[in-house]
Image (cartoon, rainbow over all chains, first blue to last red; front, side, top):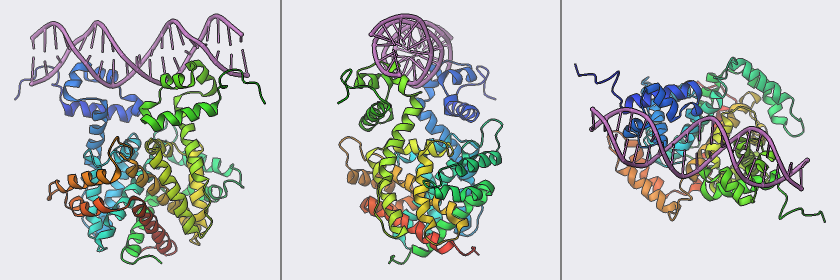
Length: 224
Length: 224
DNA sequence: ACCTGAACACCGTTCAAGT
DNA sequence: ACCTGAACACCGTTCAAGT
């Protein structure tokens, strides 16, 4: 066995692990170099030896969680696999709500970083297996990926708020929408009932199916 | 005319306006209370009298820009209006790239704030006019809104990077994708050519059409 | 090579004091 | 009612010094 110099040698891995734990516990504001050094029983200089800066640390934490979420394999039809991957990402964002804005940041930073390419690759492989023309692959994959991030981010909201469970949160939101000015917000008022009673996961998968239907229908033909 | 006490009286409006200008110039890191007080020739206390904190200021800046973007009216079929609203939001995010993560934050904060409800209402009204069953309204609207945010955020990336125009950026990205390991990233490699030559706006609208086709096709029927 | 910890520049926010 | 500006607590980052 390797000699253990102290309690546990510092490593990039251990730092990222601690960062994820802090983010899970208190969101993005829970991760500071003070909380991190305290948790790892070290000083800031030690962390900077392994990680160039805080942004890179956040990227690494995101990559670590997303890589785990993408490591599902439920073999089946391309459609089934897209649903499975989507749901896995959905649940990852549910468990780690700080991912939502973080993923938006990564998306808006081009193909740099490893997270966005991997997600596109994973969904895109299944899209290309759907049998639609190659010219629609990128658009179709984009639609799916953006839907997953957006819908998951929206549902992750307040899922972790202290003492408020999802059902009560939805009831509160629906009630608020019903109080809105009917002249200005007729649509939100009309869907309040549905929002109050819907199931997150089921609703999410229905959205995936809707986009899959669009890919199927609009993929080959040019629209009128 | 009203008496002008000094150069120009401070107001919430003027503060938000200055905040947008700073965000446009240097992104989110360009907006600090120092740069803001300097630009407005005042002290931090004066700003705090009009605005409760920095988060609220960012929300107000977002609301101001989005409200302007939603104030398009190009009357036509529901489909046409959805395309017009989507494109208007797309262009707003292109002009103000700091909006992308900001909108993700607002989405992930439930129906609080006025931005998300207004966007949902605007798109949702047109969705409900499409003639699909009411049970699919919320899902369909969500899919559209998330696609718009995600796709716009992705395209806003680096659109403002100094000295690099969009075409060159796409060329660089496509080249990078072609360098990827073919075993691990077959999909990204296969679409590199398409990415290199596509037109942002056209691609964006194609995605909207794809989702509209899905709404149309999957809206009424239950899937197999 | 890896870690320590004091120090620095900067940030959001507060508040007693002014008009 | 509205503004001033010094002060505070906190943050990311650096770096000379240790092992």
